[in-house]
Image 1 (tube, rainbow, N blue to C red):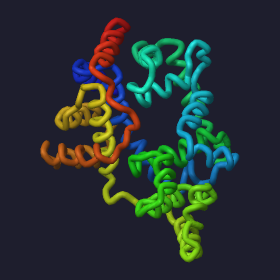
Image 2 (image 1 turned 45 degrees about the vertical axis):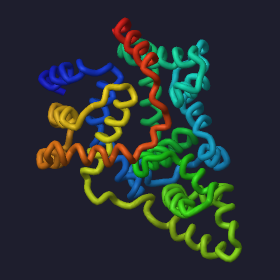
Image 3 (image 1 turned 135 degrees about the horizontal axis):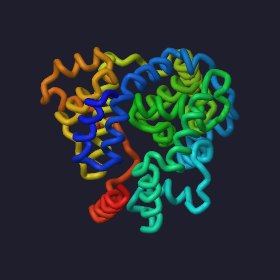
Image 4 (image 1 turned 60 degrees about the vertical axis):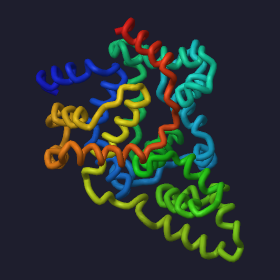
Length: 320
């Protein structure tokens, strides 16, 4: 980024907390990377040219428990923190109202520790180990189940459908009209899931339909992981909707015109076709598109109460 871009981002960020402003700038700057990532996943090219070699039992278990996946990823990427109760922190981040106050404070303190001082040893080590794992994730080298699951299943599922694989597998288990659609999405994304107990129960639930359903599994497994988006601008709109939803969780809602100005300020970080797309949209059009995308995401966390938000902001100001 050039000096003028950095100066604009500094001014733009002054109205928001470090977490919201940094996330917004990084997410928008990554829109082309997200688009490329999802294209490779859909076409099974690049990083996704060959299936990862993993322990299938552990792989399928990640569908049942997002907590086990989070903890495994944490173990791979995070530096040792003997003084942090990791399960409690992760639970507190997922549901701030559901944990005791000490767990919430520890969770928020951990976030602030990594975000208010980008040069700190802890933050640097966290970034180094995370990027090292991703750089190693190339073809046959993707052998670590949690990271492979995240790249091959979790992230594409969440980007494409706005829900986690766990949410979809629970829809399969619950039966009803949504079960077949959930199975189709999962099997197209990951043919291994056809051997998941929930999917096997769905197949056998009606003996008369079982042969027909097995045929559908084979058909879905041979298709692309998901359909191509109708427009490449989808990923810009999706990220804008996600940022709008996230910012509302912290009572710092980013409005459509502000996201437009952020895209403009990022300049060459945003592909020319996406900049042109946005130039051809009025603020009302852009706002409607963001609202549509906001509804796609199930964020998995509840909005903290105002007293907690005030406390986090006070801590951030002291650490800045």
